[in-house]
Image 1 (cartoon, rainbow, N blue to C red):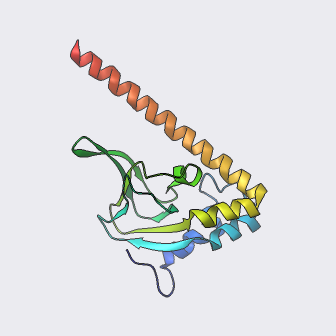
Image 2: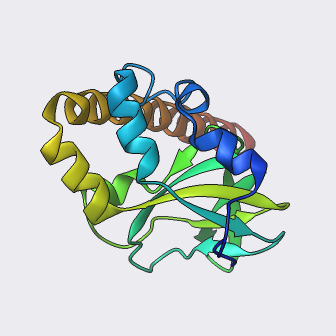
Length: 169
């Protein structure tokens, strides 16, 4: 992990600009002023290929937005890790613990040079508390995305059960 001691790389700087953040699902309905405030809270982080960003079973302390690069979301199943998702620019992770503190439900790995915008949960929650209209829009957007992810996971689970039952008959 490398935190930028001077200026963040150009791609991350562009990601933190409001026009770039506007494309992210949970931020698209914010006012320009609220989006600018939110952008000022993001800390840049650069991850090398193969670097573990979050570890399943360990309590995370921040929310992440992928500015550039690709991350894999993996979860342990018996003795191996299963790929749950592949996230690219504009995607985010760490949203579950923003609302329900606990341990990470999956591990996150950078698959190539990856630049992230990171906001500690305490800072994120304070922003939503201090800016209730923006906080409501963010919470609604995150809940919508979490619902979409849950539906997709449920569909994959049902499909895998269906095909495993077919193989057994």
